[in-house]
Length: 415
Figure (cartoon, rainbow, N blue to C red):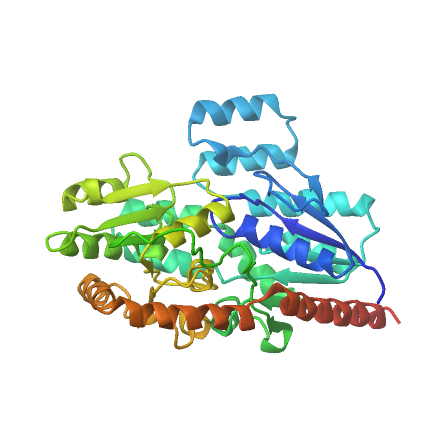
């Protein structure tokens, strides 16, 4: 097998918040484990990578490190006044999210000087720069799901004119992505549901899209017999104030349950001060029943699963729900919404419920607690399901096959 030189692009790769940093860490290590040489080229924030992976830092201005105008202005003043930096600052100032666009231009310029790579894999920037990269290299775009879904669910939460205007401005990068996506020749997506949505929302050809699941390190996410589960301790992963995650309905279910049970909820995520979630928690009177933890490593998250009695994924949409397979791999009884990609991930090893139904969620929690051992038995079979279907060893080989086909087709196109 020929050793390949692979570049993985990521416009931002936060190691803790969201799935991008985790995905980049895992896929780069998986391809490296097959014997390939892998560079990750990332904008800020940078990922935490395995020792065998080379990180090439391609900084922008990282304006979303803070939401303070003063902090952002300071960053702008300290950076060179290039056209890209001026555009990034101005777009951010007026409520946009320009990082995908500017990263695409920066990495395209970088790759004009660094032409040593056999293949380029971009993690969902779908920027104009990628169309230029695709002309010079074998190229694969990874689309976890079309961000049109985030906008759709965001707008459903608030019908006020100014809110809708601000959200449409934030998601204005979708105009670029809708133009770029149909021109990409090779796309990988992690679920059949995401493939369907990419075809519908981005107008991509189905023959250009291959479904390859994301993987999980089941040696990290595993049952811990040395840790005792806490009775009536729930756990969920959700970015507060992100409507797509459906956290409101878990909180409302908790408010119903606390009248009859001594119950608590751990939320792996960050609480925004004076934000929607903070106000809702106060209005429901569940402050004493809630705990937030953030910036946890994968090992630390696995320990929290081991301490908990039930995991909840109340998302309204998931392109590929990492928390779903993380919980199953830790053999914890799981309740998840019967929507988007979730059913194809969980099989028969979770309680699937309708989204946006806090009463049904509360009743399902009660049902699990009333016959806990039966649900533990189901959860243990769920771990076997994850090991069989989402192990990186097999998934990395699927990536490798797609990479080799992409390289072959690119070379043939030049003949």
